Amino acid sequence: MRLKSRACGFVIGATVLALAGTAVPAAADLPGETFPGGGQKGDDVYAQVEVITFDTSKNGSGPSAGAVSAPVDWSPPPCWYAPKWSPSELRDYYQRNYEAIVHDPGMPPDARNQWNEERHNYIDGDYEDFNEEKKDEGMWWGAVYNPNASIDDQLKCDRVPFWADNGETPDVENIITPEILAGLAYEQIKVPGTEVTLAPGGKSKVNLPTWAWLDGGEFKPVAVTASLAVGGLDMSATTTATPKSLRIEPGTKDARLHPASGECTINDDGSIGEPYAKGKADQEPPCGVTYLRSSGDGSYAMEATVTWEI
Image: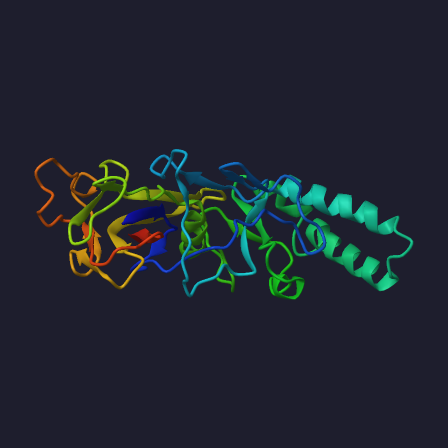
């Protein structure tokens, strides 16, 4: 009988923290304009205006590490509000767009007038010179848009830029939260691949156990922390993935699993199962499978799946 093993993907077991963002949103300006420079380069996610930083020092690494994939009941919001501009930055933004609008012959007069009124509200209306005198006391907050959301959903964050003093979290709907940060941290989690060692190697014998194990060190908790420290805020959230078990699917009903549940627990050193040693051919392994029927000229496709708790 020939036995073929294969590594498989990653399964989330108990989702203690049921968060799973789809993509880390780039920082964006008001509807209709997206800041250049936000997005992802390799493993580094960045945003030009909204400064979310990621601590990946405890994340999985190595050529076999990959992203976690799991069905969860959380999805990132289409938009949220976060600190984005100093007084001078907001002034520059309005000036750039003012110049573009007044020189756009296709811009309807009502839209041009509305924009100009909004701009003057920050110059000499409710505010004076974009709150320049309070530049060390707070920041302007604005919407950050999830690029995977529809335009209609993004526009649910339709507030014009608003001021908040340092350390203040404005009491408005769709404000940035630790839960959003946890979802963005989840996006960055990487876990090692699953490559099971089998013994005896080559062809396995019917009614004799095949031992399965993974070496220690790889399957240990990994974590990513997302932080937002700007405008007097100090907000962070850590998402942790902890390996819980290895599940074996023998590829046929004519097999007996060890243990009977097919769930091999993670050892304290991060290993799974126990390496086979000479003289143990007749013993029951802590992790493995005994095939009860020959595969004939074919082979059984055994799957090994590590379950991670998030």
